[in-house]
Length: 293
Ligand code: CAA
Image 1: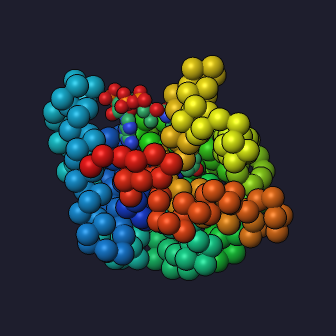
Image 2: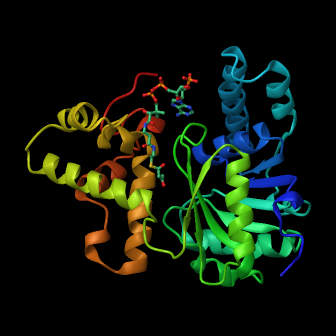
């Protein structure tokens, strides 16, 4: 294992994928002083990501949470590219936040392994695909793990650091310390389990909410009201599904089902229906709820 795999060796981070998660995760690294390159397949996606980062972090300056100079410096530290592999050549840490499809991630990890310096850690933000399914696509399984953020990543404090059976202690320590340095609270998982910890807790609530709605016990709006006003949750389970993305929920369940083969892990029929209709939640203007603009 490379001796350079330490927190102080990390200066430049590559974020692969400029969706909602990759965009905000990139901003977090830049705000903490890291050079960041965000990559995606399409220039349009990168342009949207750049605009979103600017909008979100300009607000920090407007509200006096960060100084104008800090925000400008963070923006100046961010670069965008459609060539992930060229960008990987001089980075110290890779956070993959691409689509939740195993075959795509395995190819990415195989390519990143060839392109990135030997000391670099290759982490995936996936909540559904454990790094044990990716590590053997690389020649550095000890430097592969999950570093799982929550949506919206700029706001939510938790980052799950999940080791696979071959992840080294040093990789876990470095990744957990990196989470701390960008202002997050790391939660270490000593073994992989589908859904990790937070999503398992959340899944229990969501599944019960879907059963109650399907049985006609209460409307989804009222179930959300109950979660907010009786349990003190910031959002109800249906609002949260719309925030995270119906497509994301669907693909996560499909990936879990792919790992366990358990029919109980398949997406709930209501989620399948919304997914088939392209009602992905806030991002498409319609999911459980409708969103103006
Ligand atoms: N992106 C970035 N920042 C956002 C945001 C977003 N999408 N939505 C809201 N915020 C920020 C706002 O800018 C605001 O910050 P300021 O006060 O500095 O302006 C702050 O969050 C509060 O926003 P609002 O006042 O508009 O609304 P709110 O108080 O209801 O908070 C929320 C919004 C933070 C999303 C809150 O409702 C919440 O915590 N919801 C629960 C989110 C949650 O459970 N996330 C976990 C999802 S599961 C997951 O992510 C797992 C996975 O694997 C996919």
